[in-house]
Every structure is written in structure tokens, then in C-alpha cells.
Image (tube, rainbow, N blue to C red):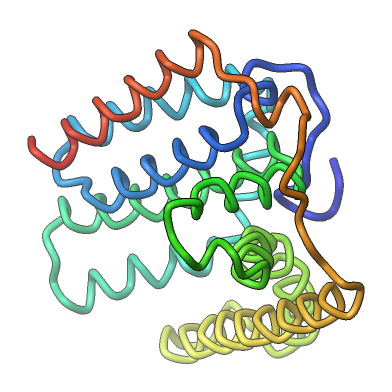
Length: 241
């Protein structure tokens, strides 16, 4: 596996060959559904769909689990915040599942969708809005999918810097401060790197084509129709029930 998480994996799976615009729509629907989790039934339904997505993508689950482990500090803080606020166990589990589902769906999308397909899909989704004419919007939105990869790189870097300062015998407060420094610095430097990438791409006269004919980008068949219906049904059930 590559050292960078969320890297496109070139496979000939069902998920890889789906219409790229619909893949982005599916991702948006699943992210919204994850935010609205409010019962164990929602968790079971979204987890079942997640397994279906993994199977259809052909991605080894070990890859996803390893990538999720890079966000362990965020998971740690979710637990700490819920403990400090005396939240019920149901709230804690809901917050954990929301975060894990959101990260996992984004990672899978990145693994099965190239950056060109992503930019094309963003352009199509923005078609009904006037902002679709500004290629910068598409550029910045597409680059957001690079955050997990950049964050992992920065996290590794700061872990190497801080590891000598960390001691398992330290107090809980000191450990929390250590994790806080790691998260904040990794995130801030990730945003800075993202900004540098966007500047570099603009200097290279970034743009996206309006007349793509790639089969994977444009095809729309029965599989896409059925999956769209399934995604909408999940969203409705999660929000209403």
C-alpha cells in the first residue's frame, strides 16, 4: 500500500466504473445521512451500506482500517469531550459512528475516483448554479479531497517531532495537551499545504474541460438508477425515522 492515504486505486470494480457525478452525489447523500444518525437502526443501515460499498469497490478492508487509524486523535477527543460533558453513552456512540462513517465514505470515494473524475463531477453538480462558471470553485472543492492524505503526512511529521516528549507515565492532562498540539499543528499545516497546492495549480493554468467523452464519466445505466434510488431511500429513512 502507498504511504499516502486516500490514493486512487486502479481497479475494474463496480464502484470504479460508476458514473462519476453519481458517485459524488452518493457521497454527499451518505455524508448527510451520517450527520443525521440518531438511532442504532440508522447505524446498522449505514454500516450495511458501507459494507456493500466496500465489496463493490474491491478495496481491502485492511487498507481502510489502517487509514482510519490515522484519525485516532480525533476519535480520542470525541470520547474525551463526551466524557467531560457527561453525555449519555448513546450520544458518545452516535458521535463516534458519525465521524467514522464520514471519514470512511470519503476515503472510499477517493480510492475509486480519479482527481479528473472528481473535478468533472463537481462541475456537473454545480451546473445549476452560476458559480459553476468559476473554475477556482471546482479546483478548491476537488482539493478538499486531498485533506486526508495531507493530514496523514503532517501527522507523521509532527509525531516524529513530538514523540520524544511523550511519556506514558505523564498525567492525563499532559497527554491531552500533547494530543491537542498534534491535532492543531497537523491541521493548520495541512491547510497551508493545501493552499500552496492550489496556488501551484493556478500557476499551471488549471482548468477543466467542458466536452469530456470518457465512458466512466458519462455513462448512466440501470445500476446507477438502482443505486440512486437506494441512496435516496436511506437518506429519507435516516432523516424522517
